[in-house]
Image (cartoon, rainbow, N blue to C red):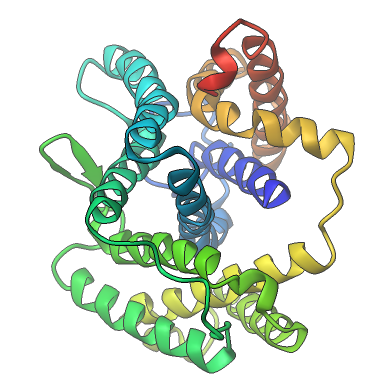
Length: 330
């Protein structure tokens, strides 16, 4: 799980690094050189958006039950308010001040995770935890049925709210088009812990799910030149849901089976990954503006910004965590 979190943090940083240099939605910085543009990078954005935040919610959900069981309701909520709420308020205030309006940017994830934790605490205050005594395990058919439910629900939602359309419900910032995915993945993370799904997933199921997810992602990169493109666009919520479920459970199997080594470098990265996620965006905007006149080509600028922001974010988090009390937060 630590290794997956590190991979996801790197991927999020590079996803944001590319937004200034392609069709990745609104971004505060625009390069002064119009040649710094990559028309193909929308494929990268589309594949990422299909699965990586859903995987974040699944991993977060996976650790919630044990945390609640160990700490109890009040301590659980206090620690979540400290670890999620405090960075949300502090960094959100900086972003809002810089934008001169209420702005959470990438911290929408932290806000919604805090909201989900609150709902879980309310649920557990009323109901007993689910028993571990269950023989269920992930199967290809089971994941396909879940993807069908998620996909049809997402398709319905997107008839009223398109992808990349963000709304605010009081102060809760969310994207309706992906919200069903995030809720389901968070719940699946909780169930994965209770029923030991990751440990129970067979090698056959893991390999098949990874293969299907990889093929769907590869197809995503080829879109625009394939005969079934119109069908994918029409049923994109369904297509994306299958990609999400299969590649995420495939990655969980891959990391469990083959990428489960805990060397010092990955342990160090894992310790800094949450803090790097929190602080990387303001740092990236500063680095983009400072390097605006540097010409290394569009792809070179994308890679330069991604690598430098990753290094600075992880190193700055490491330094910040040396301050007494900061480790409890990030």
